[in-house]
Amino acid sequence: MAKSKTPSYVLTLRIKTEMHQEHKLSKRFELCRGMYNACLRELLKRYTALKQSKKYRVVCKMENGKKRNKLFSELNKEFGLVEYSIHEFVKPMQHAFKKNIDSFTSQKIATRAFKAFEKIMYIQGKKVHFKKYGEMYSVEGKSNSTGIRYKDDNIFWNGLVLRTIVKKKDVYAHLALEDKVKFVRIKREWIKNKYVYYAQLVLEGTPPKKYNSKGMKNNSSTQKRVGIDIGTSTVAVCSETKVMLTELAPSVVELDKQIRIIQRSMDRSRRASNPLKYKEDGTFDTSNKDKWLFSKRYMRKKSQLKELQRLNRAKRKQDHEMLANSIIALGDVIFVETMSFKGLQRRAKETTV
Image (cartoon, rainbow, N blue to C red; front, side):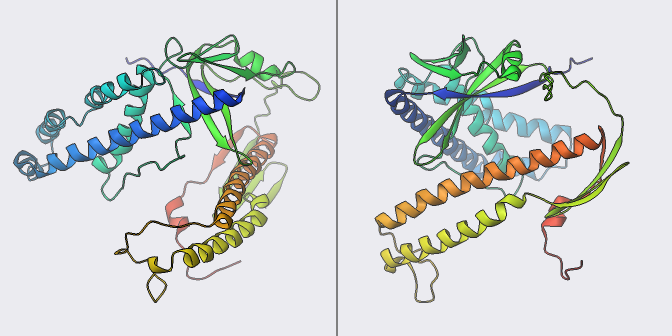
């Protein structure tokens, strides 16, 4: 019998950074972005060469079966469309930037690009998106022994030592840090006109039980049944003691309005600064290859939009977690109605209450 994978969970810690460390991290994130895009571009070139080959067209006409799958696998190896071949491709780039990027981190970037590419290889109709400037938000290692690693409340990465913040009264974090660290991920988030960095420690085992208000572990097992029915914007909950119908993420309604107002303002500014980029009917002119021009007001609005979108994500997550806690308080045996969420996304012809 195959051994089951050991469970794991994530502990997120804030990193205390200085100005020179932030500059180094920003540079390394951009190098990782360039390596990711290069791997993705190379995979698309190889995939195009594969589809143009005669062998591929012959195999495509064969009947489905083990023989056909085996031939496809051989073609993938021949054209370098396997994970380890892209590891070899990224190796020279890593050597050029070895002062900033270690080999294990570069391999993880290559793996990440390969997993993104697999979507268009096996799922028809999907597209691969390259990362724009500033869109690389996380970098991770392969293990806690080399590359990005955690030791004694510090993150070590190619000569860079980053101090993590662990509060003395944070019992959960101290209990979690007793478990083995599998690998470390450095994540950044744009908060109020600057990047804030976090360390996500992927730990082996199950998360420790949290303490209640009295300072005791909550080990009670109610064994009560709860049923939930999730809709597009509401969720119905039914337990042995309570029935409720609540809205999903009610805190983001006002933020959505502010986001729409800023987006409309940005669109007006963009059209005023780039009149030749649009046709007379207001649609985008693809034939115009001039450089986009953006005003200072537009860039301020863009920064405001980024902050509002971050708040939107944070409040939505907070609302969902509060709802989950209220459901768990009703019982620990939870039944969820099976349904097609893609079907729910389609607009209903008639709105019924």
